[in-house]
Structures are given as C-alpha cells and as structure tokens.
Image 1 (spheres, helix red, strand yellow):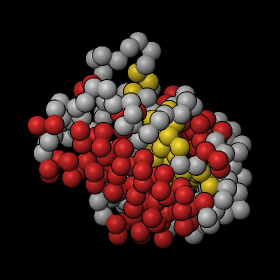
Image 2 (cartoon, rainbow, N blue to C red; image 1 turned 135 degrees about the horizontal axis):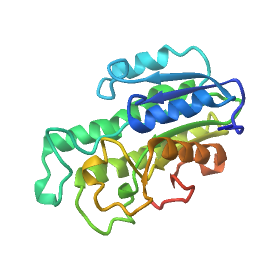
Image 3 (cartoon, rainbow, N blue to C red; image 1 turned 180 degrees about the vertical axis):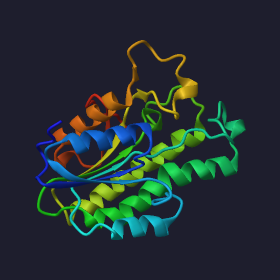
Image 4 (cartoon, one colour; image 1 turned 90 degrees about the horizontal axis):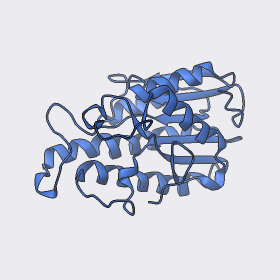
Length: 232
C-alpha cells in the first residue's frame, strides 16, 4: 500500500495495536514505503482509562506525527453484553463502554493532536460504527454501544473544527470498518451475509485507502470501509 498522499518519511501512531484491526493497520503501514516509523501502543503502555498514560505516550514522541489511527473499542466483555432493550441498561456497564469508546479517544485527541504535522497532510482517524449513526438507527437495542459511538462522532466533528484553525491541512475522521472477524464481533456473526464478514487485513487496507484519498475539506466526516459517507 503506497499511501502517497502523505509526505515521506512519515510517522504513524496506532493505538490498540494488539487488536485485530489495529494489528492489521500496523502491518500495512510498516509495509508502506511512505511510513518509515510506525509507533504502536497497547495496554498497559497506553490505557484509555488512564489519562496519565495517554499523556505520557504522546510526550514520548519527539517528532511530528502524520497519522494517528485509534483502533480501540468495546461492545461486550465477560461481565456484560450489548443491551437488547433500554430496560437492560446497566449504569456501570454503560460507563465502561463510554470510557473506552468515547472518553478514551477524546483524551487521545487531546494529547496527540498537538503533535500532528503542520506543514502537510495529517490524519487522525478513529474506529466508529455504522450503528452509531442516529439517522440510520431503525432497530433499537445496543443502547450503550450506539450512544458511545454517536458521542465519539461528535467528539471528532468538534475536534476537526478546532484543529483546522492551527493545521488547515489536517483531516479528522470517524471510520466504520464493516463487520470484521474479530473478538468484538464474534458472538454476532451468525446473521452476517455471505461476503460481508471481513478479514482484518482486508478491512484495514480499505480503511487506509479511505485515509489516503480524503482531503482537508473532508475533515469531521464519517466514512465506511468502502469510501461511502455515512450520515450522523
């Protein structure tokens, strides 16, 4: 993958590099002739629930960053599953989902955006989800996950407006990776149509193609893996 819209030699940061999509994004970037420095963070070196660890990770980078890819997210754990209805909302589970899906990426943006390159295209991208689209919600359920991703989209839109003032060539994006064969989706794959359950390497490659094609006017947008815009 070329990623020729970036200025070589470029530096990338992948957060959540131990997950399926994060590991695949890291591999694609390491294979790119443009990115000669790919910095990968995973827990405990960077813990989305610990701002000090996020601050420290950002401070450890002593050069301008061209790409930050936040590949983290939670839908379920051993302790909770996504709600089938509003009556199943548990406040502690909901707080945990928001801490990882919304607050954590917001803190990453807070500390990493000031490190982004000023004199050429730079991109800050975070994994969202189509179910976080308010206008696309026709089924209900998954209250905490939907709400946390919708809130993430607003964080990115707001940050895009602010960041453009100091870095007009920057792009901030929310990205929907499709249904990817990872631990996050594994309990919910039964109804996925043939050909729509993606290998992590395929999804990561498609997302990086989107990142390569976007321009500053696209900042604050929400895109699917195939380059199609998603309404908020």
